[in-house]
Every structure is written in structure tokens, then in C-alpha cells.
Length: 120
Image (cartoon, rainbow, N blue to C red; front, side, top):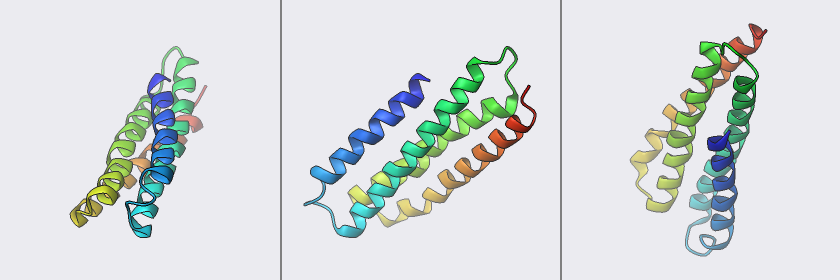
């Protein structure tokens, strides 16, 4: 739960930083890329919070539920992190890393779906 809250708070801070400090420094496209990173970080911070709550409610947590949490964390670092780095540095190759984070998110949602299906 702490990590989910930290990611959520950092996404709010990053959003404010982007809309205030970076607005005049980045191109419109770079700012748009940055904002996608912020948005996906917040979505997945909330998903991670859900996973944490579910984990706290079970005596024997599902391996899929645990995997889902880790995959959300990995996805935030890779997906949002690569978008932040891309928008701030304009190093185009960083865009090639972003889909790895997207796959982590998709896999996390799948693992969460399986865990929810089997939730008792």
C-alpha cells in the first residue's frame, strides 16, 4: 500500500511539474508524452493499491495476485519511466523500451483477472 501511495503521490507531483515547470521548456509533443507517463502511473498506482488491499485481506495470497502487484510496479518503472526520460531527453531509442512496460501492464491485468476469478 505504501508503494502504491508513493507512486500516486509522485504522479500528482509529476503532473504539476509538467504543467508548470515544463510547459515552457518542452515541445507540445514532448509534454504530451510526459503527460501519458503521468496518467498511466496514476492508473497503475490505483491498480497496485487494489492489489495491496486484496493481499491484506487474504491469509494465503494467490501467486497471480502477487505477480500482478510486481508487474504493475515493473510496468510503472519501465512504461512511465521511459516516457519521462524520452520527453525530457529527446533520446528517441527510449521509445523502444516503452512497450516492454506496456506488456508488463497487460500481463499484470491478466494475472489480476485470474486471481480475481479464483478469489475466495
